Length: 434
Ligand SMILES: CC(C)(COP(=O)(O)OP(=O)(O)OC[C@H]1O[C@@H](n2cnc3c(N)ncnc32)[C@H](O)[C@@H]1OP(=O)(O)O)[C@@H](O)C(=O)NCCC(=O)NCCS
Image (cartoon, rainbow, N blue to C red; front, top):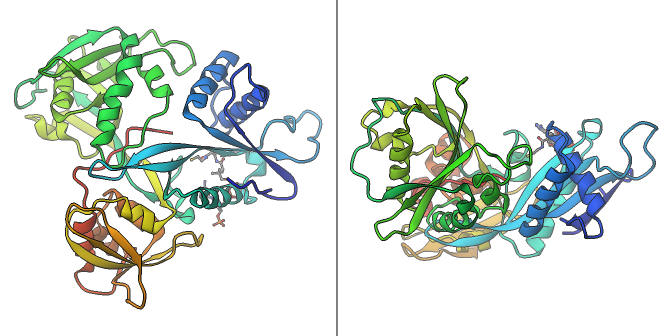
C-alpha cells in the first residue's frame, strides 16, 4: 500500500503486528492503546495487548499510524502515540456458489477527537483502496461503527444481522426430530474444532468472511473481554450421524441476578442446516433457563420457521454488518457464478474513480460471468459502485434498489434480469466481525 503523508503536519507509518521479542513491539503497543482510546474502550492491560497482538500477527495484520510530526505540548499524549489508526488484512470472502475471493479487510479505523474532520480518514482510505487495487484485489470489506461514514468511499451494505431473545420456556418446540447428537465439551476443545467447523460454514455461505485467529480463543474461553480466560464459558458440540463434529455452540450464563434466567450465545457455528436446528433444540432444553439471547443472529433465520410458535423469537436491532467495496468490476463480477442465463449492460459510477465504466455482463446459468468493457452499447442499468456491492452477494434485490431511486433502469425489465443473474444460493450472512 503506498504511504502518503495525509497532511504536512502528520507523518504516516506502516508496520506489521509484532510480538514482544520483535523490534517495533513498543510501537505496536502504543498503536493498540490508540485504538482502544478511539473506540472509547478501557485501556487494555499489558497482558491483554500482548495476547491481542499475538493473534493479529497470526492474521498478518498490517498497521498504519498517523503521528503528529512535531512535538506535542507538555502533558499531552506523546507524539509516539498515533492520532489515527488503520489496519488491514487479507481474508477470503464467499461470493456465492462456493467461490472464495481474496478480499482486502479494513479495520481499527480511528481518528482522535482532537484531530477529527481534517481529512485524515479520507487520506488513509483512498490511498489504501488504490493500493489494494494496484495489488490486484477486486474487493475490499469492513464492518462499520456508523452507517453514515463509508458510503461516500464506495462501500455498500452486503450482509445484515440482528439480536434475538428466544423464549425457551414450554412453548419452545421445534418441528421435526433431532438428526445428530449433542454433547457438552471441554471449552478448550474449540481451539481445534472451531476453525474446522467454521471452514465448512464459510464454504457454503455467501457473504461469509474467513475468521481471525481470536475467534477460536474467544469461543473456547481462552480470551475473555478483559483479556483474561473466561471461566464462564460453556461449550457443546454437535455430531452428525457418522460421528463427525459439524456444529458447536459457546455460551455463558448471565447469572441468577438476571431475570428471566438467561443463557447468552457467545458463538454458534453450524456447518449444516440439521446441526443448526439440533443446537437450538439443545439450547431450548436447558433446565433452569427461560431465554437464550444472541446478538449475532441471522436475519433470515430458519429457527423462526422451524418453531411451532414463531413468536418465541423476539427480534431487535436489525443492523448492517458486512460492507463491501468493489475495486475492480471486471474481476469482481468474473469471480461470481451467475444463477441465470442472460446479458446485461451495466454502468457503474464511482466518486473515487476506481471502478467506474460500462460493462457487458454475460452468463450461462451456473457458470462464471464473462465481463467485457462495453464499446458503444448503451447501459441498461446505472448504479453507484456502493449499490453494486449491495447486490453482489445478495444483501438486497436490484429491484428494491431501483425502487429506492438508487439504480436507474434505462431498459424495461433489466432490473428484474439483474435480480435473476445476481441471485445467490442462500441468504447472505457474515459471522465474522473485524
Ligand atoms: C469515523 C472517523 C474515523 C472519521 O475520521 P475523520 O478523520 O474525522 O474523517 P475525515 O475528516 O477524513 O472525513 C471524511 C468524510 O467523512 C465524513 N465523516 C467522517 N466521520 C463521519 C461520521 N462519523 N459520520 C458521518 N460522516 C462522517 C466527513 O464529514 C467527511 O466527509 P466529506 O469528505 O465527504 O466532506 C472518526 O470520527 C472516528 O475515529 N470516530 C470514532 C471511531 C469510529 O467510529 N471509527 C470507525 C470505525 S468503523
